[in-house]
Image (tube, rainbow, N blue to C red; front, side, top):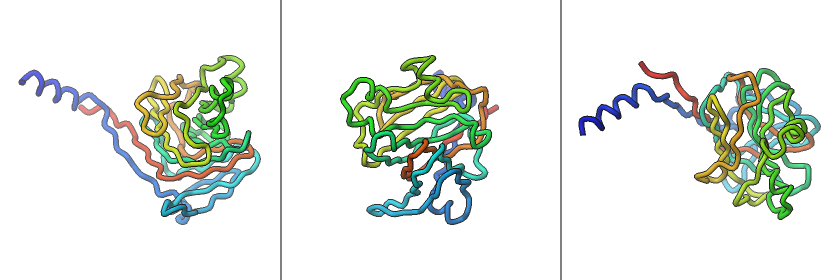
Length: 220
């Protein structure tokens, strides 16, 4: 018993603490607390769910959360794309240095229903721009930075993702799954930066209930 208590006391002193912040995206839009890049953002409502909607446009679309810097921890968000081929890429950007230098994890909902093995293996993707877009990663590391999502969500419905970022790797979970659908090592030299919403070229998307849990410093 005494040894157990001592072990718990030891762990409480060495494990990093986390604090979670939840972000009301429509409220932040109203307060001009978002930096929106290459997109238009609108606050909308669906069956009582208040969410942020991004239009379809060329180039990568970003919505940075002003004043928030992220290093390691957990990012959670509800997402909704659409089942339209090559027109739906929705995810999260992090460790952003500027509007063209960041890491991201995103999904391709238009692959969710496909039984084709190639398309199934491309349902979720990691990138690190500008050095490692998906084309470079797919060519140099086939299958290492994208994967299937099983069971796959409805491509036209809301789904939830949890992205766990550590100093060593990035793990992606969908809809409360115990096992990650993707685990990758970071391809970026950055370990801190801006965090926000991401959508790829010619894609829009919908985002709801964003929360960020930051790892704290080791307690003394």
